[in-house]
Each structure stands twice: as structure tokens, then as C-alpha cells.
Image (cartoon, rainbow, N blue to C red):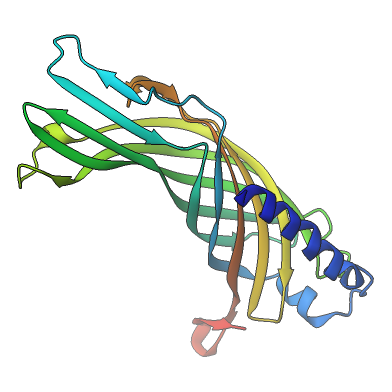
Length: 239
């Protein structure tokens, strides 16, 4: 349902912004955007493309059970910083988080409840093919990669205390691909619609499965700024 709503929002934004495409190269906002660095956050949905663990797992000695509630769709959030190399290229560093669902471990009369969380830490090169047109509506494509860190931790325990045995984690180094649309609203602020494919395959089993591939569709808000040389050669933020 969240993916469907964001898709509708995507086309709604395009419809509203069609008049902006016709604006010429003299548009001050578009011109400033093509020279600006970015910092901001995105919020939206994660759609699972990998496997899903069984709803109930029982160990061989029949002394422990693990109940999982991992959904096909989850909320996704990320913060990012983009460094502009030139009019067409930007390097973006992003840190994301997706709570994939809850797990309940019961062992020796103790029940532990926790979450399965994926943290993508990615470095990506963004390309703006229309940045020289003067349009405020700026599509982009990107590719890169980094670290995907998965962690299962316990937040609540019936025993009243937690140990290292109540958690597990895995790490994968993989690529990322995607694209989106930027829309500067002024010289200092803008919005974007961002789609990202993240292939994740943990070499060791993590909560009974290895594949955690996903696609995120998010809407972001960003602060735009550039550096301008001041007196004495010092750089200062210029909006």
C-alpha cells in the first residue's frame, strides 16, 4: 500500500512540475541548484525482493523456538550528504535504516523480543543529464556501493537482563543502483523523489535466510548550499 501511494505521489509531482521544465537557463534557482551541495533526509517505504524466514523456527534439540514477523514492506529512512563536483556530477554519502520486523526467541523459559534491522551505508555517484537545460525539474541516475549491516537485537527480555547471546549480526559489501528527480523550491531548499535498488546477500545465515534484497522509494527534503571564498581565502557557506 505504501509503495502504491508513493508511486501516485511520483506522478503527481511530475504533473505539477511540467511547467518548470519550460523555464530557461536564466532561472536563478535552477542555476544555483546545479552548483550546490546537498544535505538532507529521506523517508518512505522498503519493499522486500529477497527471502522471508519461516514464521516459526525450532532448534534440533527442541529447546528453543524463534518466531518471526518479517514483512514484505517496511518503513525506510536515510540521511545523506551530497558533494557537487560539477554541474553534472555529485558524490553522495547516505546512511539508511529499515526495521524489517520483530523476532521472539523463547529458550529455557526465557522470552526475548527484538527487531531485525538493516543499515545500508553507501557511497554513490549521481549524474544529472539535464542540469545544463535550466530546468528546475532535474532527473538523476546513480550507482555506487558500500556496506549493508544486518542486526538482530533484543529490546525486551522476561529474564530482566540481556546477554551477547540475545543478538546476531551480518555484514555484506554490495553495490546500489537507482535514480530519481530533484526539485529545488528555492535557493536553499528542495525536494526529491528517490528510488534505490539494494542487493543484499549475507554469506552466513541471518535469521535463517541469506537474501535481504530490497528496493526503497522515498521522498526527501534537502538543504542546498555552496562555498564561496571570503576574505583571507577562507571558505564560508553561500546560499
